[in-house]
Image 1 (tube, rainbow, N blue to C red):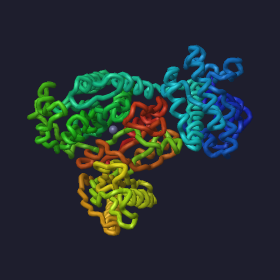
Image 2 (cartoon, rainbow, N blue to C red):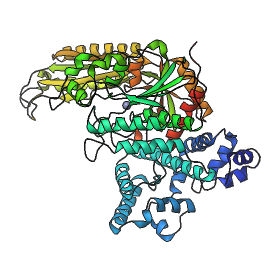
Image 3 (cartoon, rainbow, N blue to C red):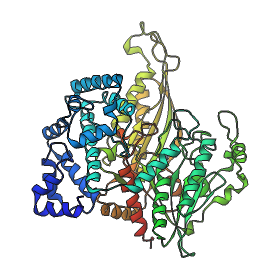
Image 4 (cartoon, rainbow, N blue to C red):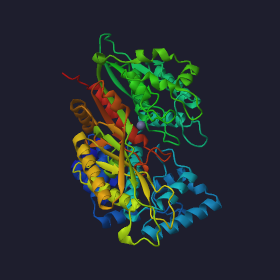
Amino acid sequence: MTTLEQLNGSAARDVPAFVNTLHGIYEHSPWIPERAAKLGPFANITALKQALQGVVTGAERAEQLGLIRAHPELAGKAAIAGELTAESTGEQAKAGLNLCTPEEFATLQKLNGDYNAKFGFPFILAVKGATGKGLTRQQIITTFTRRLRNQPEDELREALRQIGRIAEMRINDLLGYTPAIGATIMEWAEEIGSWSEDEGALTCTFMTDAHRRTADQIAHWMREAGMHAHIDAVGNVVGRYLSTDPQAKTLMTGSHYDTVRNGGKYDGREGILLPIAIVKHLHEKGETLPFHFEIIGFSEEEGVRFKSTFLGSNAIIGQFDLNLLNLTDRDGVSMRDVLTQAGHDVTAIPKIARDPSDLLGYVEVHIEQGPVLLNRDLPVGIVTSIAGSSRYLVNLKGVASHAGTTPMSMRKDAAAAAAEIILYVEQRCGQDQHASLVGTVGQLQVPNGSTNVIPGACVLSLDIRAAADDIRDAAVEDVLKKIEEISQRRSVDVTIEKTVSAPAAPCAHWLMNQLAAATERAGVKPFELASGAGHDAMTIAKMTDVAMLFTRCGNGGISHNPLETMTADDAEVSAQILLDFLRNFKAKV
Ligand SMILES: [Zn+2]
């Protein structure tokens, strides 16, 4: 068995030995360990992986293409002829690619051919998957088919990332390393991810059977991990890992366990399961913390069933609006009835509110739900702020007239005005130097539109977000001004209705700094990014200082979708960072 000490020794004194030990990590490409050797010594296995993959992303394009082309096709000719490296043979066999049916084999050959013709290199996929246990042949074929539709530049980067993931698992094997906490988190997410109100998709909305079963299971895992656990009057699962000092204050963490319809397994759940796995680890070692550590599985964040978001976290901060109990779901059942039938006492909801003076702060771990960390080859990132958002509904009224008889100069085309607005939103929101400003027109309709009629009306939505309120406000002001100007010039009437205005929730620097220090110690360069999506931390920020750690999201950063994915290794790195953060936590002075 190779050790990290041996590798560090040879990186410093005997580079050929270092290259030789790592020769099987990157297929036929000794230049990668050769260049990485200069970056040693490596504080831990993550630092080694980051250094090696950094060489790959920093290489010349010709070298990157050479690396990609050094890989065999999946179930391709080399596999049949037995010409693969030992590593590739084992990985392809683990995914059962040596057991293809004739149909699957034919499909893969066709995909290999089409892929090579489009991109000019072989399809590369870490077939051992997110947990190292191997993808199914069906998953491989589905991924292959999906990636065949990618743009060439995107696919080149995806191929390099897959090579990085393959290398990561080969390094684990070489050093006899298992991401044990990460594997537990993945297993748990898989288990509750199979409990759904929709067949064949993950849907877990407020107080359904799947939702309550999930809550019970989370409470069970909390107790097994050595915590005191209960489910409160709005369905939040609350677990406390008590300090030996009864006077100690509480550090809070958590996230939500409800999902959108046909959602992903890690959105929200990671932020509950990861700290439970950490507490389990601490408890097994007989280690306590100098503060009470509270994990909350928030019952409701997404707002799917009752169209009202953040029910769980609003109850915790004492801002649960009791009028919401009268809201009804699509079957006409009220929230009050749903809670009562589940055995909850709605009169106890106000008592859920926490005393802010007992809290040290709140830290939430969440899957990024975007492509930023993925594109930077970073397993984690530190959130600077949860973006505030402004939403509007814009109604444009022109004149619907004959498409054949109305000259171009005499039209009042509402859709053409909308088109100009959309392009302006894109251009204006592309101007933020910190890149946290985003603007989207996600809904666009020409009511009663017809092929031969000039659009007389057009309705569009507007969604503008930014990490800082002044940046967002300035963009909103410019966009609204531009809408007026465009409508006037085109003689189109406009009405603008504000539907949402939520301020940004900045993360606390003193917490971010401690997360950054823990990230650095984990072998990862601390990287800051804003959160464009809303999170429970946004609500909790009204009560105490908050921070967030994002975990890299695979599959191009897709979320709120069954394709949402993360790896056991990234879950492990995130867990190690939170664990280190807890062990070194210093309260705000
Ligand atoms: Zn979420």
